[in-house]
Length: 199
Length: 249
Image 1 (cartoon, chains in turn red, cyan):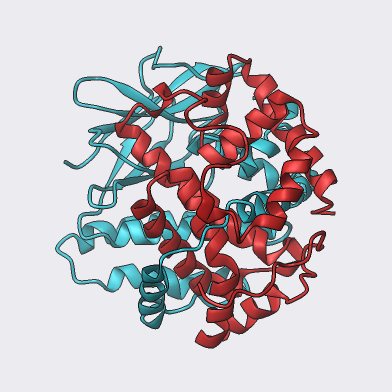
Image 2 (tube, each protein chain N blue to C red):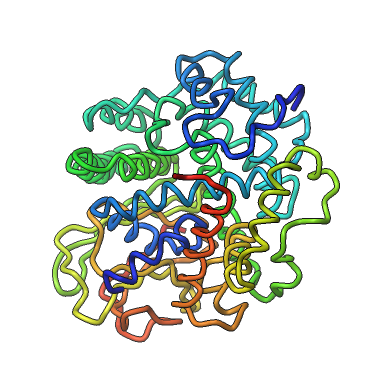
């Protein structure tokens, strides 16, 4: 990625991003490759970072990121700003693809044996390369994560960043299924309120 | 799963923490639950922030690869109405494979279901359409695979399942016709089974969905099967399968 725009302002509302990723997506839907360059600069970092985080394998993460970004190009006309921000639309695709890839890998390897501790349910601290691009978001998120209960935070991060099913999360945390489902929901809801997004 | 339980799945759904069958069941529920759809929409904004927080500068090779691919990738047309899907659906049938005829009827059958599903959902839930559309695209890719093969098998208790699989894609799509809901307190559970009899759950559903289920990530399993299990599912099949279909080796 080159010449990334300054970080999108904190506290943006869906569909009202300052530089209008949704507007750029509409231009992409008209087949404009120059518009896609702009979209790429905005989203390739989070898409690749998320895939890397979930897959823990740079080569596979690059493959998945490639699929996601091509899908954004292909499906740009299907994005509807009335149904959430462009960024959420892209990251939903990226997360789904990454998790589906993890599950496919899981079929062969018994990933569940690996402990929750190994995959560090707290926010990532270890990758220096990650630090620059998402710094502002990381600070906001870390602050809001601090407002969750341990069980909420672990449930959300194990599912979102490690790609576990809620059944696997329940197993890892030694917590009943119903509790884990509920904690994922109210954990995310509390983050939504703290971050001021989605309303 | 009770109705109240389904509502609490919004968080797990947004985290992609549901199995394939539960994901499909939740999407089906969401199509008739505007509150769930609204909540999912809000919680997805949290996901976007969580993704931003782990942003990593990708290698330059990614941009090159993506640029090379989009130059040769046709963009999907906007969704206007369900009929907009038809030209897309016709594409796989044009490929010149030995298995074409075998797959052709399956394409018609499976996509007819997809389009029928889109037909009634377009009235109230665009979200569901988008989900189905992504899946229908993936299913049409599955059907276009040179080694796609299809079989229709009976389901005990009435109805049939259409099973389309491709070893090269490691995917299988299953659609159901005329299959009743699971008995009260029970759930259908789908399994992938190996030659040695080991079974891996790929999801639960109370009733068979009226759009095809796509199972990705086959790992050499030789059959797909469905049993009736106690609500909440079982770790391994505990009853005689109501449906078993061999997957093409």
